Image 1 (tube, helix red, strand yellow):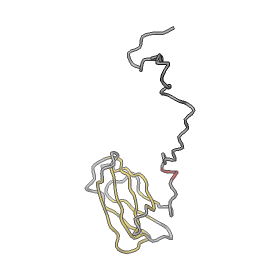
Image 2 (cartoon, rainbow, N blue to C red):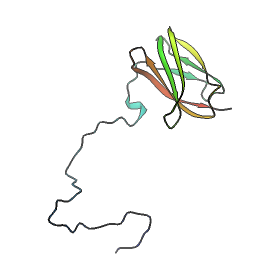
Image 3 (cartoon, rainbow, N blue to C red):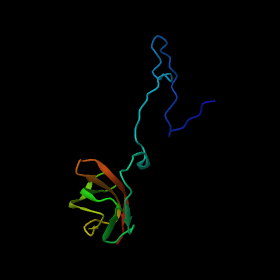
Image 4 (cartoon, one colour):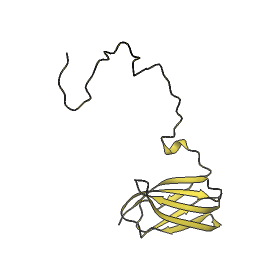
Length: 125
């Protein structure tokens, strides 16, 4: 039994019998998209603390030394801060006092322009 509902797409039968049916469920698309941060392989683990933070955020890369670019993005993907490390460092601190309250993504890019690490931080004031 059909009922009226203003909040869904109506069900229209396909009466054009001389045309191919527009929705063919036998077609399979093999799209290999990354939908989760865990799907991307990291070069090495990064420990970021304190999270949430007030102003300063510490990066600890353990035995690995990092030299490159650290980018901070808001939830819409707009770049909010860029920091370049010119010397290889195992630990470093970044001042985030110019960022507003909110959640930000960070991404570490090495000299070969490969993303080596990424994550999420929260700035609270």
